[in-house]
Length: 165
Ligand SMILES: [Zn+2]
Image (cartoon, rainbow, N blue to C red; front, side):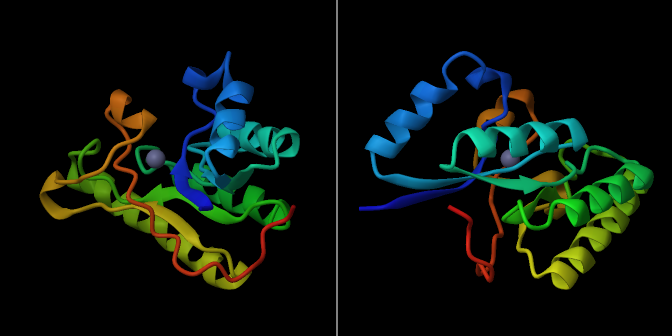
């Protein structure tokens, strides 16, 4: 059986010393792809570098919704445009009312997400997002959950462009 992990944070420091071992074990277990999201520009650069070294990783570039900065969202849009041939999706993006409790922050999240949705349509790249459920409820888990950040329920939609490699 072949498996694909649709949402992982493989650039997390938790994998700093044993990433190669983890990826080898995953491949031996039948994993043929790990969609690896990023949370900011530095993270996106790291994810692209890792994907060059480890073809099992399928890189996404995105801005985690706790970054309440539309200039940072625009910078990520520009980064994705510049690397659209190297990423398999836009993520991690979304709405997160769990981490951001203030409603004025939710408005910024919505504006940033609108930019990524429009870019997704324009570049024909799927979104890899989290749900931002009213009331701050969410489910799921990933490495970022330990930091109280990620709900990791991906919304990749259908993949319209083939992966490289
Ligand atoms: Zn996540």
